[in-house]
Amino acid sequence: MSALHRPAGTLTAGADPILLTPETAGWTYTGLRVLRLAPGARRTVHTGEFEAFVLPLAGSCTVRVDGEVFALEGRDSVFTRVTDFAYVPRDAEVELATDSGVEVALPMARCTRRLTPKYGPAEEVPVEVRGAGRATRQVVNFGTPGVWEHADKLNACELLTPDGNWSSYPPHKHDESTECEVANEEIYYFRIAGPDGITPSPTGFGMHRTYTADGTLDENVAVRDGDVFLIPHGYHGPCIAAPGYPMYYLNVLAGPAAERSMAFCDDPAHAWVRDQWHHETLDPRCPLTDHKGRIE
Image (cartoon, rainbow, N blue to C red; front, side, top):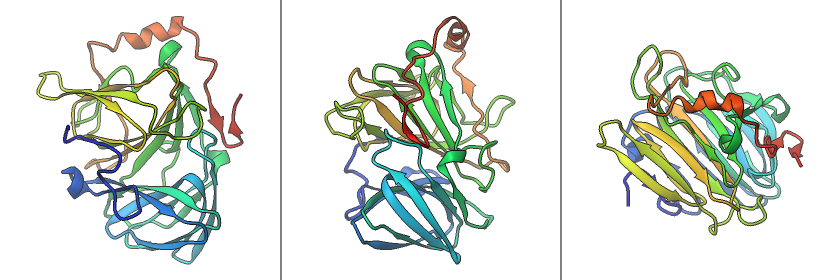
């Protein structure tokens, strides 16, 4: 097994699906927790030196932090709706509560500035259709620079790829500071829908590629529901959704730059593909969701 590929079940912490710290990943800034709360449950989380987003994956919850209370209207699954979310600062005690049960992601970044908590309503989250043809996909820019400026280091977005399509393409990298890119550590957290296209299932699968130009890193892996892939450096992409199995992934990025940025450089061997999109139509299945629900 690749040290960068963490299959579902390998990062569990008790009943929680994922506890990934920078130390676990072998880097400095970026982490991810995925928590499960039963109906009626409450959970207190201490953020320590990390800022985080509270992002419902399935279900809804209430967030209490620094005297603020945010009621997050979630979703049945990541394939059904764009969700409300909240930003919580470092050095905070965060109480999560749910009436009907919730699975919630906490993408996080080690940071130095302590900001105030803030609520992000789903109706204000931009949904972008990117690419064309079989590279058409949906990007949910809930926590990206230029859209969400209320963070010190943390960047995050969601990707939805219709079955049979390719995303994170052309392959790109962001592992050094140049005119083109900013260094970021990146996490891919995958959810794969089953045959109904909505319910995450271990049945489906997709593919992910990460590599370097000199060949010292060359990873081509099958990813399944709940898997995590770490990108410390190198080009990454494509992510391919197998026919019949739509793919979701949560991207979490952070790095040493003074200003938040997700700037990247395409692999020059494949950058020409972007020019071809001008001659292709968009996949009519995109966008798949918005804040109102699925778009049929």
